[in-house]
Image 1 (cartoon, rainbow, N blue to C red):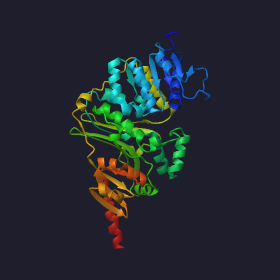
Image 2 (cartoon, helix red, strand yellow; image 1 turned 180 degrees about the horizontal axis):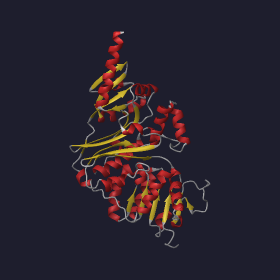
Image 3 (cartoon, rainbow, N blue to C red; image 1 turned 120 degrees about the vertical axis):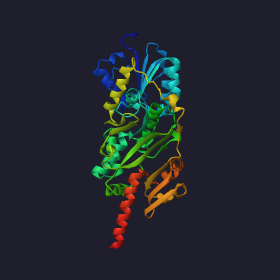
Length: 406
């Protein structure tokens, strides 16, 4: 086999894999594709002229293959594939955010040790090249905060709930039919997907490797109609917001449904779009927005990585300074809940509105501990800023006083 044309292996031919292949053919790069590794050989695929195989070992045995594009859903299998490819000094492109979040520190060392390259822009924020932005645009400035919508599926569902006032199940079905949600959507709606992306960004922006089980993530699956009604009554929306902050070398991180008002840029981000606000010492605040789900937007980012392999390389320049940063899950936050009293033993302060509905102040670490309780009782948890809490409390007291006078 000639090295002139067949040098690339594509592993996975699902939604993103097909999106990547679309850009290969559109840019006359498909002749470089030596093989496509698939899971099910009996499934019909277009085009059927590709060299499909179910044996991934062919990728390692073929010394002419120097580039591996890994686009499968199984994170454990993906890790084995990427690890072996890097150990052979191959260049690797991946979009498997779960695998990367669990193993990034080890993969960075393998890249350094064996001289391969590892790019994964497609794993983080859809069409927004946020890793490139952090590595290049902020190379000479210190980032203090990253905040944003990192999951297009959840944002699409929330948009339908607020704008079309349909039910959660119907909104989820629409997201699945549109290709924004998987048949098994828990990674998206329970906040895992946004968490994995947040942890990858944390490594690049702050040089800190944090494992998923050490961080807080709560999704949108426990939100109630009453929560939406409460938000609308107070001129708010609910967004699934990832938040990473470094203050005085103390790092806090969370993924939570969050109240946002019309003055917040995230308020206006709809459907499958992602959005990220980056705050740094000298540049200040900058806002990035782009499609976060779909075959072609993600496929484009993967193809861009593929084309950039020759000259691009992540620097991980913040790892040295990250050793001086302490991950701090004991930071206090305010949350609203329809069943705030169920969290009584974790609360440091509570303000009841009606029955079990109200606000509570507690540590992020306590919310991590309470995750099982939250899921068992389908407790809605929605974060809010101190300013929003103050406004909501004033509104409540004003309404209460008005009712009392009647």
